[in-house]
Length: 89
Image: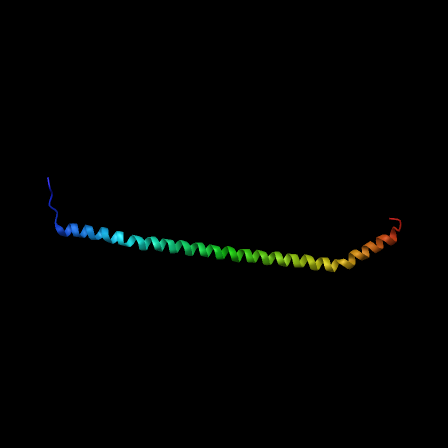
């Protein structure tokens, strides 16, 4: 049994389906761009964090080196005094 449907209804449904199908590639590409932008943002965030940690590490190493340089005379004095107090050792 065939049912007759108004042509305006079939045209409206067809146009709606065509609209959805036509928009799909643009939406998919938009999702790709958004994901790429988010990934790039995370990459730069990690790079800045790593650079900050490297700067802290460099400052700590410099501080340790300066402390060792400043303590050289103290160590030499301590060894000399120890040798004077205990000449047999």
